[in-house]
Length: 365
Image (tube, rainbow, N blue to C red):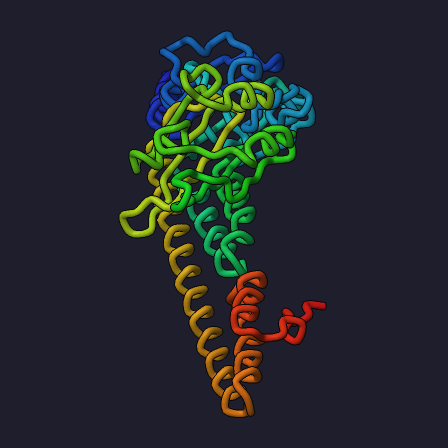
């Protein structure tokens, strides 16, 4: 009677805890699973029992590569009797999606013989999301603080975003106001993608408003998500994407106030469902980038004004020291080479009947 009560007590505990718990026999077959385990993995009551655990829920790594059984920590625990823990693996649900988990695999012994293992695990999706968000935002902030120019910052920004959020290729497009098209400012891709041809093929492309994914986001001012760009009607780079195994893409506008001044685009080799949390994060990051661009442009404008003012002071001093109109013209033009194209300055010199051979651009050697 006491043994029966003890079993019932243990069963109540197992069914009440929030952690997923399941047991394996020596062959890796699931022998029991508590309600939390079946709920987290998306299975009905009893559906896990009798199934081989590794090919069912632990067959593939987070990056999509196969996870061989001989490298699996859970299987290793049953081979050598050592308890193992991990926070870097994923389990796969009945729906075919992966979830990041923290788990501990504890071997079961009977008369000093390993007869199986008990695995206790937690879904750490929310924790990973928060960590990735913080890490990515910190990396983006650091890149912007260290870069000397907008163009210098782009590769680091895209790498920080793609690595932090686990995407394979990123690119930044800016609005050319004069031509009214989007031009590619820069890109980044993971070495595992081998996207050299995609990079070359995209480098000199332009998009008008409403043309292609970047152009549509430019026109609407709203983020966009395409689960499969290869089959998406009107996606202009579908063939390039197919050649490199790129499926899902999203794009978010980069703003300066209310004006869209660019578009951030990312691609993934995995086919991903729309993630509004990710799009909100990218909207926050693109806002940071927009503010950074605005600040850099303002700083550049101040530097140009300061340079012009210094040049005017130099011209003023040269004019005061000049002894003839010709010397005044030459002195002024020598300081204006940095602002006026050479051929225009030459025309000005000829119109002023000056000797252009006397006034030439300063050496850059």
